[in-house]
Image 1 (tube, rainbow, N blue to C red):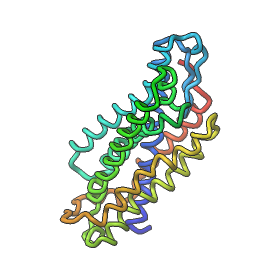
Image 2 (cartoon, rainbow, N blue to C red):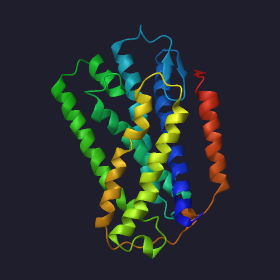
Image 3 (cartoon, helix red, strand yellow):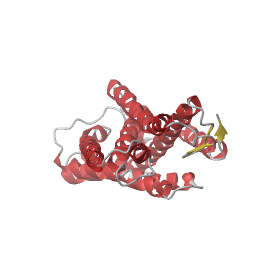
Length: 265
């Protein structure tokens, strides 16, 4: 397998790992706040079942709905800080990049779709609090603006993983490199995640894995405009890592065998 093919494999594994962990953290946020507020939650792989939520106050229901997106926001912030503090272009740093943007994407995506996706976390908050349409649209606009800006700024962080001059020498080569480290991992990873999400209780669980990555088109298309890049000194992402693949398989087992059936909190 050539180096670029190994980069596709490794970035895909890291993307799916980051996506599954983002899902778990998001749903755990709902579940733990639900537990604190007496909703008797059951944590599943991509949703939370509540046995006693109907009798809760509107305020408690709002807290439970907001918990997931806020946990994702905290994830994005912390992973982003750790990414910028990590110097070596390693598997760990590429994971942090995926993990950070997926956390932000989860939070901002809910803000962006709140007015139209009324069964989503932010949509539920809008309904519970009777928020008028104009403020909803303003919040959605802010979420979309920030998300698109973050997508635009992702180009250089991904390009910095290149450790060969010919991969970033021309506009075409930069586009090719970002396609392999961003776009293919997203498309392949979204397919894997969709399969792992089964069974689903809402159609959005099938749509979300692919639509949530649309933002990655921006850094790919923006790559041709980036110049004056320095190649990385580290070539780890172009090598096999059996430790990485083993951790990936363990996470899938936990996701499917333990979380999919549900864990009572």
